[in-house]
Length: 286
Image 1: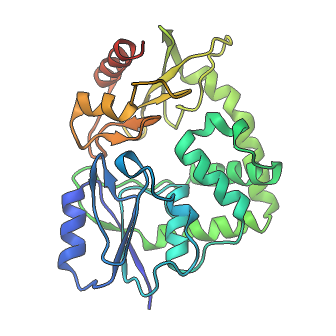
Image 2 (image 1 turned 45 degrees about the horizontal axis):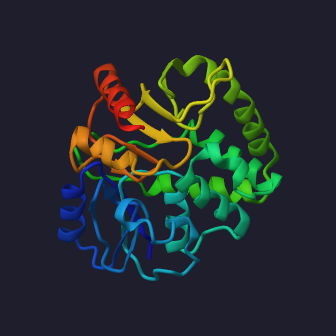
């Protein structure tokens, strides 16, 4: 039996699809849309927002959901791929690496120094990021459900190669890490009241220090490749939730968790939304 994977930016469309096909045994991995969650009939992997007490998908063991025919996803990232790999029994054995992946998914890449990870697993992490930047998969903004089995398997194969020590992929990860300094410069727009504003075509919410060395308390960003806005906190702030900030602005389809959150997955956002998010964050942070 071949497990099939499906991606959608709409909770309603994904739930309808999983419920009306011939897929009797289903799972979902990170199929959360703000506080709206799509459930699988066999297993549901989700750990953000009100489900923060649940394990990260990438922490599940191989064989955790045998006989699953179809898996629904809201996005594909390292945590998601780890969960998918566990479902089909192809999660590579690397406990330290998966613990690091779970830590970064919850706490952000900027907390890497606090992860306790060893140098080998950190190299593996950057090798994945280097691979991922050229293999991103995005759900259609109209909510249409699309098959992504090939893309998910490609991601799992890449992780297998990285964890086995593929020299070329690890070298690419080293280069990716070195490029972070340049990204800090090119993405930076301004800092106001401790809130750093960034615009670029990749993830930048882990960059809490400006090019001049000023440390920010939060980052608000606009990704020009996905037309999405994200807010993240460098450290927890009592009474401040990124998820609540974005939901106050854009409704229940926006979300994430207290430390990082973004707009609705199927929304197209630009500079107006970025400015609104910046102003909201400045007003919210004490």
